[in-house]
Length: 311
Image (tube, rainbow, N blue to C red; front, side, top):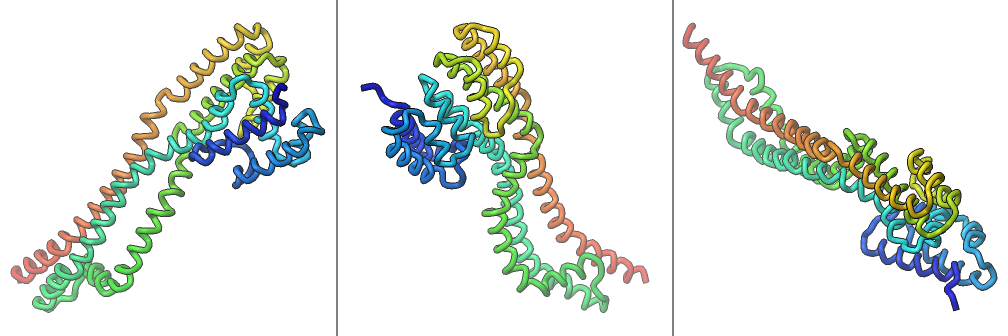
């Protein structure tokens, strides 16, 4: 007995749940708990599969998003669901790929900040008292950077406790926020994601055309299963409408490879170099500030001695 559409979708949903459990992110349009939602859909499909030969009315009765409905129809129509799964996994994978250089670029500033914190403790415990003693011996009032260092030393019980807490918050929360911000607004990321969505649509159309469904349905399914509901690219749509299924599939595969080339061109150097340059700049500022705090007060003390000698 041939497998019904509901039974096949139940099997596909189980495969989807297995991928989600393995940590493979999929843009399904099912909210924050896709596994539980897929289980609920499977229960409804199992209860109604004998009474309803088509899955579309069942999915509509479940009030699932149009995005998932289109994905389900595309999975059922395609002989091989792998390209469909790849196309809905790609947007999140791209976001992770964009955020990885940011995470690596944060390591250097955080290490330098930690070393700067230890250096400031050493400065306040051993160096600042010596500077203060020099001014007392000269019967002078501390001025300039020395005065600021003495104030920092006096407030040490406060910042010595607060800094580790803020440092830990930067590691746990700040890095995650910066990665999301860069993944959304970083140089070249939006254009790359746009080309990757075009690539995903071309691959999805190729799989749908291979399945033998009519052209209009293939275009509707490829459009509806996009996470951002992008319109079908004019080149891909023209290929589907004006070529035979055999020629269209090959042309769409070549178009997908071209979109992949456009997405990857120059992007890797931008996404690696910009965060690294920003991280190096921040680390350099920390080192410069610590160096100035260490040497400028002694220069002020030497100038004071020179003035006293001149008198």
